[in-house]
Image 1 (cartoon, rainbow, N blue to C red):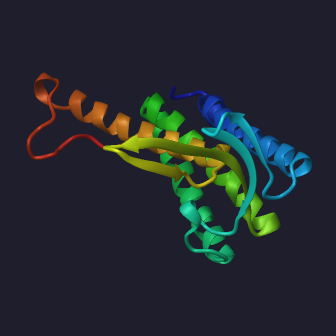
Image 2 (spheres, rainbow, N blue to C red; image 1 turned 135 degrees about the horizontal axis):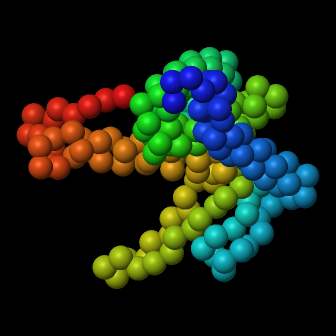
Amino acid sequence: MGSRPLFTRHSFYYGLALVVFLLDQATKWAISSRLPLYAERPVIDDFFSITHFRNAGAAFGILQNQRAFFLIVTVVVATGVIWYLDKAVRRGRRMLAAALAMLLGGAVGNFVDRALYGEVVDFLQFRFRFEWFGTPVDYTYPVFNLADSAIVVGVGLILLDSLLDRRRETPGGRASPNGEGSAV
């Protein structure tokens, strides 16, 4: 990998981030242009529906109307992710690089919404209805979007990569008791 141009070594991962970003923006545009705000379209009975919702906060609706804060944090995080992505690619850490690319694409997708509109378009809604030891449970998970999904999958892959790396770096493939392992 030493003499290849930077773009060539990183193009797959930045391409993945771009695909995540474009899919996120396309789905948000489709929802915004075709479904009135707060309208709900069932997809799988009461379990899964497409619901047009706007969120001026973070996950689960926390920190509402903190636009400047989110924009600054996203720029800092995206800068760190790009730096870490470069490091992961240089070290051949493909799973970590793919995870960071998904995280980057999702973060930029929500950043663009916040920068342009002051809020994020959310539309994926899951409702869980079941009985727990004789007690009915009716829980609606907070509405989210593809960018949020990519961020969660990216974080999950980062954790998985860390666990796998830790096992690779210890004798016999077992995690060392003192928690040492290699970091990127």
